[in-house]
Length: 403
Image 1 (cartoon, rainbow, N blue to C red):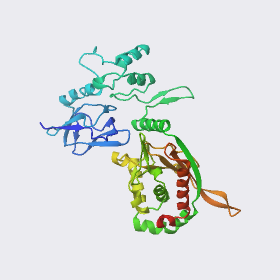
Image 2: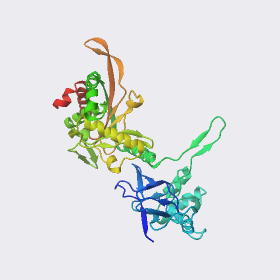
Image 3: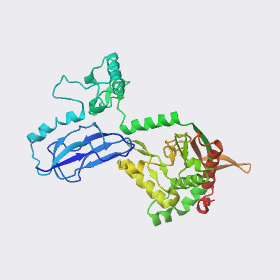
Image 4: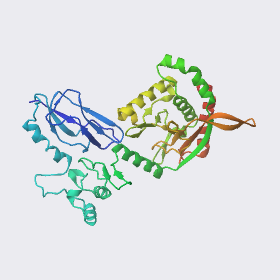
């Protein structure tokens, strides 16, 4: 018998734990080497866990919905076993063995997990017993947070999460669905940003006619030459980089009482995915041309839709761009992505009446919004930085001449 262990992949330092989504094989099933066994959701990405060897899945130690940490053993494969049409005895016995690893349990049904004093007091006040609360502490110990989660219906545990519950109310139905780990993390970071940053937003409008004209002139030859379509986002990325060079505070971050000035330009591009908003990073954009940027954005968009973005591709970043315009947004106030100090919001380009040389004319206008951390960035730098982006977009040759 040759047993191969199935373990949780290494997670990034900022990711403490993850959630098993759904096993694609059951105990007793044959598996091929490198076949995907299960997907693991972190607060950043969904990771695929391949089979380390061909054989038969003989044990599942953590069930669907379980909470796990890096390098944790979650299953075993016997490379010498042969799957049969009917489940064999050993795999049948292995399935229940997953329960001790998935939730605090013992051979005695009367044994209950330990609870912290504050948790025990809160359970008593809430008329809950230990069997109704899943502990997330060491050795299954119940914490006060576990009890609060149980009371609010958002229990965080290593057992399968609560399913969606539909409540029939005649013509006023309701459905309760647990947040995914990614959605919960997004909510946490948004609240953290608003609580810890002095966020202020400045606005400006940009005449997109020069960019539109340049794009229309070169889009066909651009696509033939580079194998990717020429979009508008690459112009916004280059314009933002142009401004960040002029005003380094917009590319800085806060670390305690220190301001960290970054000598590189890593711009995060907010992308909508089926699991929620993700922000993959374009690294060293000052060294990229328009084609490089468009190719990378297209690659990230495809990966986001398929849930294939890696932790490395989502980690870091010195500045972010959010494009609500793809959904038709006219104006918004984007929230800073900590520990960054600024974020650019771009919106739908629409024909609008504007005044030029005393005359009312129609121009394709895009409203830009720059949210910034007022703790380190004064209005002067923010306003002038946004003006630099506006000037670069209204005269794209500036980007080529670095003016």
